[in-house]
Length: 108
Image (cartoon, rainbow, N blue to C red; front, top):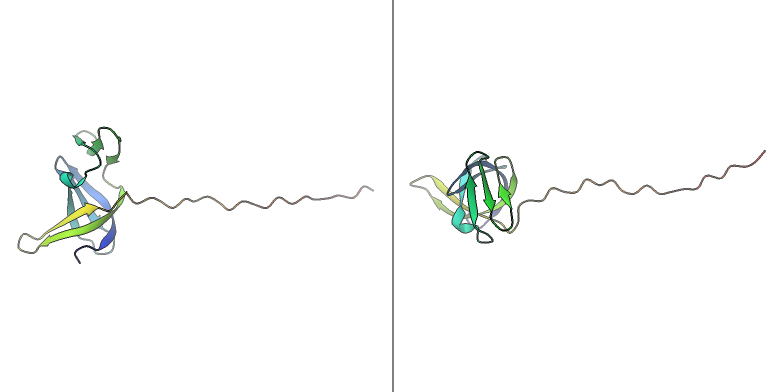
């Protein structure tokens, strides 16, 4: 399924990238740090995080992301992935506005 986009979550972070587990298929692949071209990312070992120097964008275990499969190596049993545009954004959970209604009371 090369070039298809999937939802997943970061399962591990290393100095050379992060591993993403796909929600639908329970397989894991690597997003290599060289594919993250929007910033220079530094590995923060104590926090298990990759953090962008200028954008301060971070990738840590548990974060939901959208990834595109860029390659599959069947011999080595490896899946290569790239971050799809932006991280997956959680839908806003704002409540619809309640309609204000005036209640008129009659004087007695």
